[in-house]
Structure formats: C-alpha cells, structure tokens
Length: 541
Image (cartoon, rainbow, N blue to C red):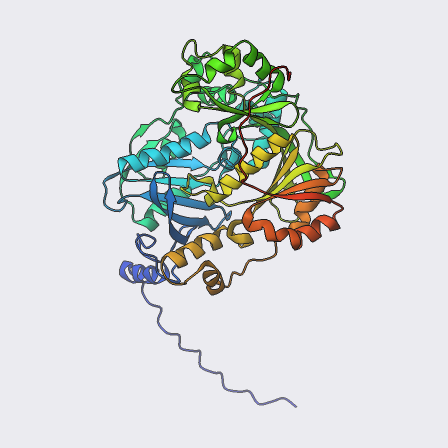
C-alpha cells in the first residue's frame, strides 16, 4: 500500500564561511608553528620548532680543543638525515658570520684516513671560527657528496683499481652518479629557526657551495680558502677536485708523487655473503690510516741499515730530533716514534729522502663496505694483514658516535679507536667492525636530547634523562655484528680488544655471542696499556 508522502525537510542552514584576510591567515599560521629564532637561546622543555622540513631536535654545549661550541641538532623530515649547526659566539646580532658547509666523511673523521682533506678542513674551520670569535659550522650527513658510503667506497675501489688513471668524478659518471648529489635546503631553514640574519663569509674552496647559499636567499659577502699541503696519499683526490672546479693551487704546484696502495685492487659486482646473506658486499679498497701517536712502522731490516750507517743516530740527535724512539713489534718490524713537525719541514741534511719517505708512510688497512638488508644501513669493516692463518686475530667491535667525529677536548671514542688500530698494527693481523652506537643504541637524536636535558638541569643524570624521554636503550644487533666478523676471521680464533668500561661485557652478551658463533676466544685485552721503547741490537737484521 503506498505510503503517504512526507513533507520535504527544509534544507540545512549553513553557517556563513569566514572571509579570510591576511591578518586572520597570519594568526592561524602563528598557532601552527614557532616564530623565527625559536631554536636559539635556552631550550624549552618539550618544544621542537619546525620550519619547512627541518625539525629542531636538541641543543647542547660541546667542549672542543678550540673552545666551547653550541651544537644545535636538527633533522630533515624527508630523508631523516641529521644536520648539526656548531655555533660560536654571538650569532644572533653579529652582522657578518664565518661559516663552513661541511659534508660528513667517516673515513677521515672516524677511521683516521688520510686520502682526502676533509678532517683538516673540518678542524681548520673550528680553529678559524674560534679565532674570529663568531660563526657557524653546518655539518651535513651527506657522505661522498651525497651518495653515501657505499657509493663513495665503490668510487674509491674503481679509482684504485685504475691506479689513479681515472678521477673521482670520472668514476662517479661511470657508476651512473652525478658529480654532486648534495642538497643545502636545510641551511636557510636552520637560519630561520636560529634567528640568524647575518651575511656570510664562507670557508670553502668550492664555488658551488657559495652559489647554493645565494640560491636560498642568503647573503654571501666573501670566501676564505681552507687549503692544506697535499700528501702522496691524497694528491690524486685533491687533483680531481682542482680539475672539477675547486679553487686549489697546491695540487698543481707540489713536487710530491702519488702513492699507490700496497696491493692491487680488483673491482667486483655487489653480492651477498654466502654465510650471511643479509649483508651485500659493495666495495673493498685500501685506506691509508694516519699513524697513532706518530708511530710509523719500519721493517727491522731497514732500521738495522739506518743503525749501521749512522742515519738513525743522526735522526735522534740534537735538541729537536726527528726520531724520538723505537720499539719492536711482531713480524720483524718496529714502531718508530717521530716528531711530525720536524718531518714536515724536511730541512736539508735532516735525513736521506728514502728515510723521510719511510717515516711518512701510513698504516694501510683494507676497508670492506656492506649494505645491510635488515637494518638498511651501511656496515664498515677494516682488516689488517692476513686473518686467515691459525694465529688469533685481534678484533674490535667499535661503537662509533657522531659527536666523536669532532675535535673534542676529551675524545674517548677516538682514543679507543686509535688504541685499537695501534694494537692491531703491532700484532700484525686484526679486524675492526664499526658499529653505530649513538645514545647506546637509542640513536643520535636520543644522545643529543639526553645531553640537553642534563645540561639544562631538567634531569640529574643521563639514565634519568633517557627514562624521561621514554628512550631506554634497545638491544644492540650483536648477532649481525658477529656474523659479519665471522666472515672476516675464517679460523674463528680471536683476541678481543675492549675499553675498561666495556670489560664486564666479556662475561655477558659478547662472550655468549662469540661462543654461539663458533669463535675461540684466546684472550681479552684492555686498551690503553703503555709500551716501552727499545732500540734494535746490532746484528738483528
């Protein structure tokens, strides 16, 4: 039966839409974000100003060898990389500031590599800005001109395989990479968050960085170079930069000859490790490592020749000798301790050129770079000598922290790494596996935030600050680290290097993990024990 029709409901009355003027829109935006300069000054608990795609994480003071710098930590929300702005002096009202845009370089800043000039430029910028009294160093996580360590390592492998016959930029092109993948958009956004309105004097040899700042609307008043004397181990790289447009004059003027790796380098296609297929072997090349404590390695046979003909005696004579001491190490070799300032002057009659060349030789480590399918991270392993013999290899699982890359007044991470390098070189064989360990596994943002909370007095200690953040350290990926270590020590015989703080670890997770992966631990050594100087006896060659 048809239903009686219902009367139509009146249409709803809609509220009149507001008419947005510029004042209303500005007020709405002000409710959405912090004003310019919100990340400067004293931090406010819970505040994380955001501008564009750059988020303020934390601020804390760092004591460097050149004074106290304020580290402002930011993170790019698109690709998640960190940017650190190291500020010195008054950056808010000083009309002109000195600055350096510095891209990360783990091989020189953590691994002590001397095949580039990145560490010298970074420390030179800290020194110069502290001397000027005001400025900012922008440290960007853009390894290898933005291609990451995998791309950079494959470039190094190709260049070394060619015996330096092709340049870095030619290698990039051959690998399908652009000359430069870096992006500097975060700089202007950080200036907004820190309230910086100054013009800039840029510490750089690269005109492209100056243009990048100008394209962001920042005013560049001028530049100052950061150039250092080439060595045989970075001359090829610096020559490539000069050919690529960097304003460098010394590579073309030096009489120094390029040095080649100690063994041939054979390039290979990326492949998974058969015994740990989560790890894709991407590159392997030789890294010249700066000697630790200015102790270089000299074969006993060569040192005996210097002793017999009087060269060693003359090098150790005078009020400022070149050679300060010698001590025997494994494998018929000696550590010879030198005065680097005397060596750098190379005055006539100081020593034969062959001796000066020997005393300038770095430690040659082999770098193996992997891509980890599980963590999507790059893994770095350094090997020294042959680790395939039955003799136990010295091994170090080294926790790298980002703050440890900088010239801190007390650099515990760098000191431990250097001590491990020295022990391995003296022993003759060994492996160092670099492990990302910022914030004890909680990440760099956690580490910086904990430092800010403690320095600001919000929390009494780092554990309390981590608890307040809800960022208790998670478990380290020890299983993955040991699988990768096992690949590099086929015999499974290891002697483990630990810092004093890590010593209790050998009785816990590390000891259990080593046993589970089939290692035979021949001993545990605490890093930092001194060694005595000795001279070779006559007739020991």
